[in-house]
Length: 383
Image (cartoon, rainbow, N blue to C red):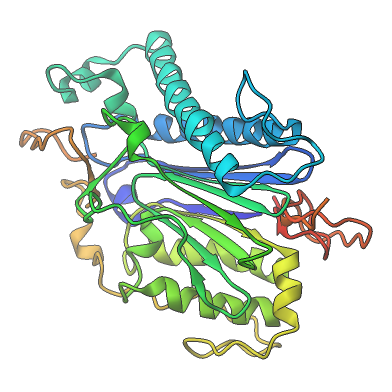
């Protein structure tokens, strides 16, 4: 897995920290898990940077436990429904996601927030930003995107905004997670919402039936920096071309530059964080296909020019708008109520498709979601 995170220009101007977080870890015997979170920038969520860090840690922990349960063949604490030698159906995995993964994340995140508040009570300044009746978790509000790979299965879960984009071997975009009509660019669902469990959206993908070469989890700072609303289509085509022409080391060197351009005043000016999982099995499938037609000019094989998939929006947040007396333009949490700040308050055994390390070719392995990048492993992660 490859990751990159960049503080947004508006956050730098208002002296706010990078409120995004990202973690990747091995999961089970063969899989990997990646979590990306975006702490809310609205002044009401004064500890959202802590909230996002808690979210990715807990998300990865729960994802690892999901993979362990799948390995053990346990669909619940009380009943074995999948034998170790049997492949579970998508419906069985989905049941485990709905009954274990999602509620576990929500409950543990809330408990971790309450423990953090007990250990470090709100300061007077933080108390002044809270509204009457605010649950303590509101100050820690954060989104979460999670990808868990196990054998030939890809499990996706998301609450809040951000983008989860699969890149298919032919350059097509796989948008497996359902849209949420509550997300309109101004409002977002959240782990701190009153019904976070119901607000989670999930998807289960069998990569033997729907081949995937890569999957990207990105906070909204990436998507908001793009010109076109359907930028994911161009992104997939561009990245597929790069994957055919370049190796993972080149890609790892480019990812931080992509995040930086999106986070700049010429992009979205918002914190931008990306996790990119590569699936060697999908890449091998891609290598046997005709060349992918890129959405724009692809770099030549000998060029070292930085190329960002899709086209960056050059006037999303001009630097002149990133003033020190106004906060970043970020979504407010759905259903918490719209509260305007006072003038004195600034807005603050199968091939593994998804490995976790750079290429260490091992023809004997066939893990679709490995923690290292053998050519036979379908999913890859790297530091």
